[in-house]
Structure formats: structure tokens, C-alpha cells
Image (tube, rainbow, N blue to C red):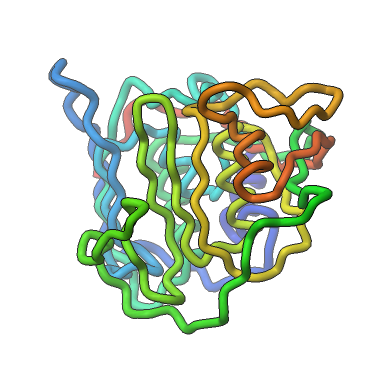
Length: 287
């Protein structure tokens, strides 16, 4: 198990090319007080590579499960272990992590550094393996996609989304080239606007919604901006006969993909990387 951990930390999830090993300049891991009964605190993460604060990252109100997902760059359906299997679970304990990163730290190096901290402070033991899992291929409908590719535009300066005016659809008007996602949950539905999005990234969103692996097989290689509106939560699988008759009321994500985007989901057996946490301490070691 120690050898597996060293391999994963040295060359990354999926055994990619070796990179220079770095460590956090300063890191603090603390168990937060339990919720006071007035509601569950919001999970927040700020800073890190690719943000306006690349040399400082802060996690607040984070369960260990979410920290593992971030450090190992895995989706919820890829993670299993005692107390970690439930995709909607937040865990009984919440943690605060504040870390200072060296200048120029890449996202891959940051994740390796966070993996080391979790392994050392929580005594995590894990294994990884590939398994065949039932999932979906994201494909274009027979009648064709309704998405229109955008012109290639360099990304603008990163500004808080609150600083942008809102359009008629209620979402911020992002400048050309800015990539992002804004979600508007309502009583019986979720409306999400995707800005300058590629289909492989959109497949990850669909995967998280369905809690199953989804791969992009659309053949669409451009960037797209669009809105998707569907029922809250994962919906039952579509009919086996492939019927495209829409359901009454708010569409499931399956029907929304067809009617709004001209896409569809096709069941498939997919080889999937799985991360199993075999052992972990509930309370981290001292700073």
C-alpha cells in the first residue's frame, strides 16, 4: 500500500509523466466545530492555481470526502470506501485547510501536494484500479446538434461574475472567451448556463448529475455557450426502447439534452478508474 501511494503521488492519478516534487510552504489542517443546529455551513474553496490567488488556497467547512475528490481529481462515482460511497454525503466532520503554495505551482503539482497532506495527516491508505462500469456515451441526435460553435477568442481578464450585467435569461453577460458555468436552482428545476464550454467538459457535468461515467462521443470540437434546464437531481434511465416522447412537466436531463441541445445519451460499458479508500483516521494529526 505504501508503494501504491508513492507511485500515485510521484507521477499523479493515472500514472502520468513524472514532475518536480513540491511541498506547501505553509499548511494548516484543523477540525472545525460541529454545526450549531442552525443549518449546514456552506462548503467553500478559494484560491489555488488558475485563480486570482494562485499561491494561497483555503478550504472551509470541507468534509474529508470532498477533500479527497479535489486532491485526487476524481468524480464522486469513482470514489468508494467506508463512509465515502454516498454521492450526496457530506460527512460528520468538517475541516479547514489553509495552504501557501510556491510561485509557479501547476494544478498537477498542487494536487500531488494536497494528496501528500491528506495521506500524512489522515493516515489514508488507498488503492486504485480500473473497472468496467455502466455509463453513457454523449452523442449527437439523428436530426443534428442545436449548438452553434463560437469564434475563437482569447480569454479576458478574470472578474467576479457579480460585476457583469445580467441578460434577459437572468444570467450574467460574460465577455467573449470567458469560460464558466452559472447555476440557477428553482423550486422544481435547475437552469444552468455554460459559457465557452467544450463537450468533454460538458460530459463531466452530465456525469456528475447522473452520478455515472459519461464520455463525449459527439464529435463536436468547438466552444459553445448554451442554457440547459432540467429536473433537479438524477433522473431514472430513459426507456429501453429509445422512445423520445417528452415527459410532462419539467424535462429530465435525458429529455432536456434531446429537445434543447440536440444531444442524447446512449448506455455503454466504460472502463473507469476507481479510487478505493481502505483506511483513514477521522481526526487529522497535529499541525
